[in-house]
Image 1: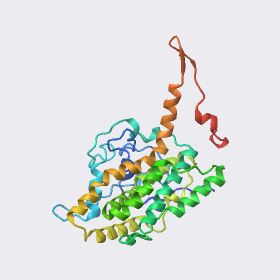
Image 2: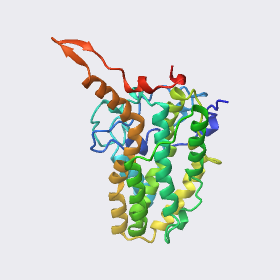
Image 3: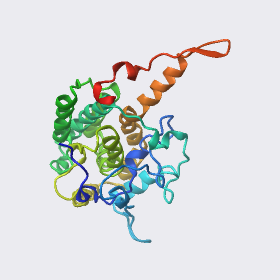
Image 4: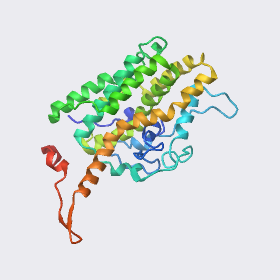
Length: 310
């Protein structure tokens, strides 16, 4: 019953690790997005990972940029050099950018899906507000696929559904409030959160699905039809809406980009940070005597691992 990655599912032309994998790389200690150029083997059939090519949305030299092109350029400027050698402008802060070191468990992934669902629920509710209804039924909605994936993990692995983390709840509340008070800034969050998931998010998900779930393809990473065409259509909606904004409103929206990285990146921390934090806690509890290790506590993961993790 294992789904694999058919070539047509991975034809999105996006910067392989663009936007989403940089969410944690802007001046924070948990900057661990994967680096472009040293992408780990994902085990995708048909070399799907190798077909993820860079998307150039910038207008020709001298031409006026659309607002979505401006948002992309702003986002790329916050990428590190390793994530985007040609366009990244931030220095890598630490070794957390190495995706190969990620050790996501099934429980970690369940938490990530639950947190993601909370944020997507807020996004889908927010676009019902006046002035934002152009983003209703875009084809990028993720709540229903996430519901099915969470149910799958419950049934297949008998995992319980955890409570949403405070970070995800806070981000969801923030988005609902922002949609009412500052539509341009909300659109910046909408753009970066949704578009990042179709690019770097899929590459991160592929690693987890390949290594932790034997290649099972979760619905969270599937869309109806050609997602590239859907993204193009949504960009058109954003550009049409932003055409009536003043330059000041557009600049204010662009200034929200770093905040989208910070808040969105806190969700990704579940996939990476817990494993690293568990390792640190383990080291801190090692008992020594006379300069020699006398006792090493059993890892929390070993204590709670299930039969399928053997």
